[in-house]
Image: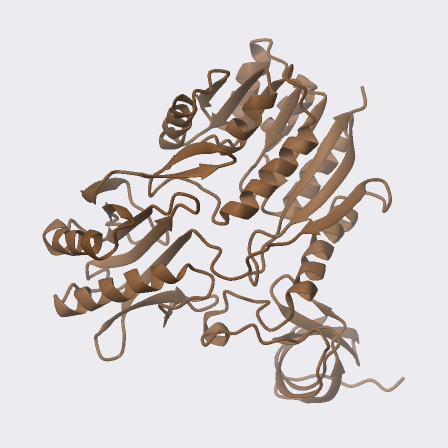
Length: 464
């Protein structure tokens, strides 16, 4: 077979795209002098036949850009966005939603088959739970603020793999009211000459505009993240916002003086209205502060938590441990079918919110521990506590070794794992499988249409 050697700027006249990655890159293959190389092409779709130029070459793979779509894929679709190419947040906006769901379902499947090394057919892979609302579904957005080339303050989103702000106040993933609030705020910022933050020099005032909206309640919170106290500059804006937008119930200022990628600082001050807003999640009233973790897609989160409840198979007599519990939303959604629920979370504000949420909903069979999930699990184990069901919802890095080891030693009948990272979920489930548990069911859940992330839920049962 004829082999070619690839170099930067080479043209591949005809490349068939056979797969798409979680980052939205189409994948084709070509034979080279060194073997078969994968070619990753941004914006390409499975089924496309394209002409492309190579822009980067590595040992066994290279990256290209589309010069011409010779034959478009049947999955190709324009789902609309003026800044998708420069922003990079919606990596699947160029394909149909049905094709996107297939990709995400395969991401979860491959994580458990290849990374978790579970034999195909050894567990039930349920169909992915897709979203009914694929636009305007986010209840939270964080907009970085910067100066454009003319010195005017603009806000939008960071371009992919950079901290260059792409101006955008009309993101299709956000509710339309967010756009109205942003435009009103930025007009004020420029009129009053409130200086935007400059990451390179560490000067300027306004770093981010953070907006949250209760999906069911309609209550809106606006938080201005600033480098130093800007109460004098922002309190009049806060008053004007609440007059202009009656659904705004809270305007706060978060002070973050550090030169860091972390958005929020430690100090939070209320400029107008209440300190928090409220929403309903799975029938429970939930208080939400600017620093609270709260799923950004409320209807889909409710479906995810209902799935967790189904996987937990509660009868009303179970002792449930909810690890990485946040503000208690999952545990509270299970409480009506459990004898008792204990949540564990390391963030003190989240634990306080969880306790308040339990009180507000007259849930008297739930308590919450402020501790790292691994340490909390070990403390409960050392005290002789052995829950019947353990639910985990860890961060992207997954469960730590202490948490997994404590779960095994507690020997619950069921472990329900919710994860925003299928790779670490598969790894953690493999650990449990190797220590007396059997993976029964896995289901992908699309929380973020158009974006590259996918969540999943899995249930394991004890074999001992």
